[in-house]
Image 1 (cartoon, rainbow, N blue to C red):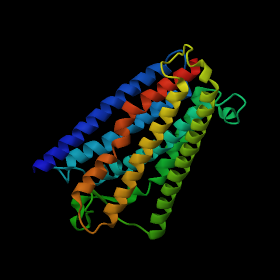
Image 2 (image 1 turned 180 degrees about the vertical axis):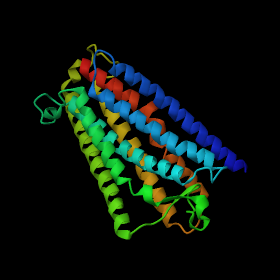
Image 3 (image 1 turned 90 degrees about the vertical axis):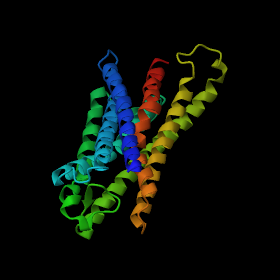
Length: 296
């Protein structure tokens, strides 16, 4: 009973902390975008923080409630929560990838091929964001037909879920949607890695060229190329750490013959990790980075 209360309080604290952090950053970038200098990267940060809020609310609050009220959600509630949680996870991957790509374009030389990808208007960034919503809504649509409430058939409850469970469907359909999810993750993580690697390479070359200006007056206390490199490393390492740790633990729990409650609790908290830490570690650096480079 005590462990249950501690777990519930921890989920509540993590969800609340992440919500406040993301809301603060969201409002900040909304005001920045409404200012005189609108930038496409501001819209990306707004979308990323909104996605983080979705993840925190859809995963954190149900977990907190379900610790003591396993049958709180009816079947429709389960379908909605699981569907939008899966979709928000996909949106987070796609948006993080787009963020690194846009940052790479921002700092590219004017004669670079990457520079040709620069959007003519900040509103054009809405097109890929809309595509992300359509893509992830379609990839997750099978959940609407195969998610059930645990109170309806307790004999089929997954040992790793508190209030909803997945009813396996046709193997062909199941593997088709799984393949689409894996392909989506691989493609967007590949873009993220390529863009981030290009940024690190480009900024390293730029840093070598401006060594003689170390004593010059810069807009930022730290040279902007160093801030960009730090941002790339934070973005890649933080995202990949939480993503792959969550994947490995989920696979372990799926194949495990025993109910490992400790590993399950760690996996549940890690699934909120990126949404929790990104506003405090990644997003402010990213916004300041864009301002530094534009002004410098």
